[in-house]
Image 1 (cartoon, chains in turn green, red):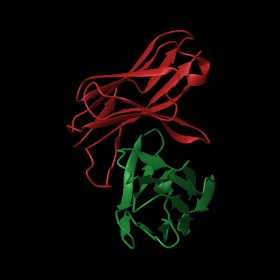
Image 2 (cartoon, chains in turn brown, yellow; image 1 turned 30 degrees about the horizontal axis):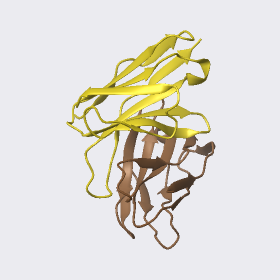
Image 3 (tube, rainbow over the protein chains, first blue to last red; image 1 turned 90 degrees about the vertical axis):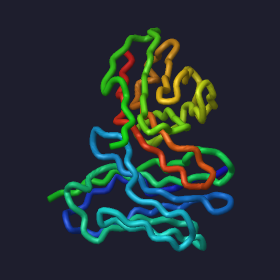
Length: 113
Length: 115
């Protein structure tokens, strides 16, 4: 079945450091790909998405490119802030007809000043 | 501002109690979902519903049931709470697909402790 594998952390960075969170997937066809973020004490919210190969999603300084050849959707940010401290989830939307999302296990990021 | 709301942020119950977790969305979404979130395990789908009175089991339905009598409301029921059901419970909703783009909108979560 469809699956998502992502870095699990936890990861601690200093402010202004470069961030990469790896995400790879296994799926049939061409799924849509998502990054969700969960700030402390809150539910998940969509950070960015890409719906077809070579699409780049971007939001709040974060970027991720849908790479079909490497089945990857790595999240990057050039300069993290303390306010980026959160748990990050990679997810895919199956094309099998299901309405479900398949989530990775999440990665906790802490950014220190 | 679109919203998914959950009835409680924190809940403490005793073993054997019947527990109801309520979720309401105001986006007229067809699909609604219940997940539990545990450290190291990520999000696991318990049940989902794609229409009123319709439900499907997710990955971990044992010990849970659901009810969807109205489109905007999806209830998770723990028939007889046990300590291993202590967890964060997240509700989500999405519009009906038709494509592969199925963004889900999440509520703030209910942290349930079973003593």
